[in-house]
Length: 561
Image (cartoon, rainbow, N blue to C red):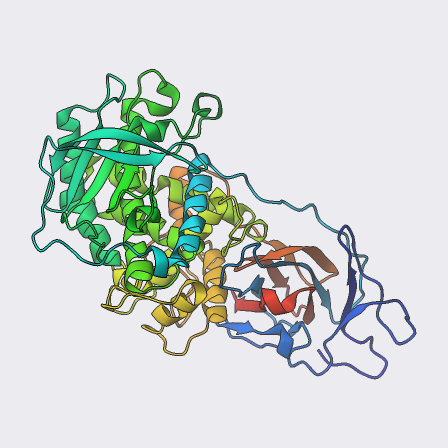
């Protein structure tokens, strides 16, 4: 855009209030209290078709300028995003104004759009989030509460028929515990399954438990340990214990009314010195209850069990890598959950269909992840990638967590099929001393595998661009980073959730007086297509953010054509 002395100055003006966003004018004669984004002196961002760039608006006065289109027109995707990658108790977020205009820069009145404040959490995600945050608190006390490091000189695994007691969360707040007695029903080389002695009739048979044990031994254990590293063995028994108990069912007392239930959990407290610790590697799963068929019908419980085991086992491995070996804090919840949902996907890809008799394993293990991803794409600006420590763990956030880990794993230059070398790096599996970094710092260190010196802002920006580029059949980008190597997401959504369009549907403008506002959340962003017709006018965008220091705003831009 070229400015003559008589041309209007390209600028965005605005004032941010809790309940109102208004554009107040731009010019020397205007004395209203305004925030001005001045695009004078900012060079246009000129990209070839398929090229992309991540721009720090702090270096461009908040402005992004796109040149006039040629005879074929042009289309760009712009994502105004937050590159904040470390969890905070209340989350990183700020009000924002995003405005686009042609080079005449006629500024319209800005109306505040209706804001979606976020979906409610499922019972399972809210419970998981509570446990992950409490684990991070406990990890800060590791010097006082680390479990004994002395191991028995001879490992003594349980045998079938052994009986012992366990302490299990009494309610969904896990503020108190209940003691249950259980008996070992299966013992393998890596895992043992204990069944509560007082479960409802009509539940698991010995054949069922043997099948679950074989699934863990042959597939779930090797999948998780290959992708994430090894678990601890603080009790020296050589096995991971899975306790199946109706006390897990009892964590969802309103399930018949809500249709939501907690399927199981791992709690790092069991690996620390604490009166309520079980002093060893234990995770928990529910049992069938014919009396509550809506939630705990046997076929439904069995479909959930494999995904629960592989998900919670990753949390156990992560706690060992970060807390017991690394001596630091537990992994931040957003990345920890992303890795556990990635573990579910691996189960879907690698477990034979014979272990999933009611459906194919890929659908059984991954359907919920794809559903959560679709919900995130429906309104990405409404949910954080890096959720707050106090978040309720909404399902769309879980979708974002999984998508980001999946996209990052797809960048691996050495494991083009699954990307598990990337997830091993994210858990510090190659370091005997464990891992001391978490969150965004951990991501950047792991990503150095494919690009030394890369920043989190570039990674998050490219991920956002990839999310939309997936909808553009035939789109290519030289680095190969604007897509998912392991998924055709558009085809997957169509197969599982028939819908007329790809769920990520940005606003679109040719630059003629576009304006929007809302809340920019940690790691997430607002998407906008700039579609210029034949010889279309140059376009300028302005981004105004109240709390830019914490939010770390960026423009991610790709020229689609």
